[in-house]
Amino acid sequence: MKTDLSNSQIDAFNEDGFIVIEDFLNVGELENWRATLAESLAIRGGNKLPDRKSVGTLDDDESYYDTVFTQRLNLWMDNPNMRDLILDPEIGRMVCDLGGIDGVRCWHDQALIKPAWGNPTAWHLDTPFWSFFDKNAISIWVALDDATLQNGCLYFMPGSHKETTYENPGITQEFNSIFNHYPQFRDVMPTSAPMKAGSCSFHNGLAVHSAGANITPYDRRAMTCAFMPDGSTFNGQQNILSDKQVAALKVGDLLNNEDQNPLVYSRNS
Image 1 (cartoon, rainbow, N blue to C red):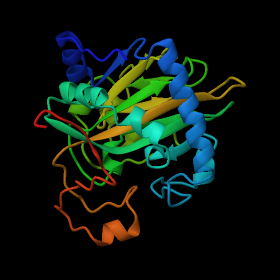
Image 2: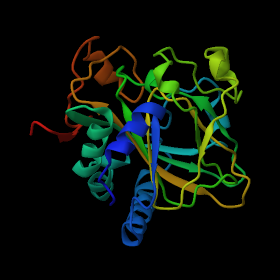
Image 3: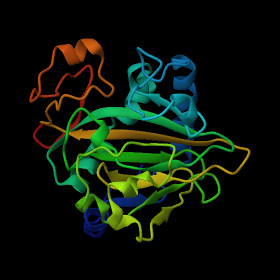
Image 4: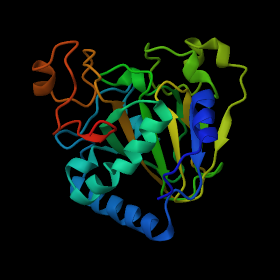
């Protein structure tokens, strides 16, 4: 993996809220990630989470979103091979370097497969969905197929992470509904982020982003992971947590359960 970051890359991330790293994986690593994803999907079956079929955080009928992406979360819990990939300390170190933080935990991984002829993913934020609020939450998005303008690559609103809040505009069937909450971005030209297979992006959880429609007869595969700064606390939202976990938490409790949110990297360890 290409894991060294220059000061200029870190500065660009902090300014824009995202960065693309070309050829993050070499050819052999890319094939391993693809094989591990296929293995993980076979193990998981139809459940979006290890213990349930539905995530329960989308605003509209989830059947609509099955035409936007095939979504499977926390595959690392099912497959030790995926755990080795997603919880790699070198990726955690990159997240810490980008966010200027001392440690990160896995919030959740996520396979996002945009199906052939799939609908676009509306403009949205990530962090407002999660069970913690932190301005330095960061996600990696690894392209396992070429992500192109034609098959649904990512788009970002540069610098938007500096102006957004933890209010959740949601992900709706209206592609542009986020502008009802953030009208200042309506006239901003977004940045497209096409990537060759094996490249990746990192983005801040408060960056406004979307993905285009897949207007091809082939699926577009990506593997992602959201990272939570170590020391984050429960904000009262369930998100991916089980009913039992939520019942045992109160607002302000540390989210440091190693079985749910393992420590990926710490400068202090």
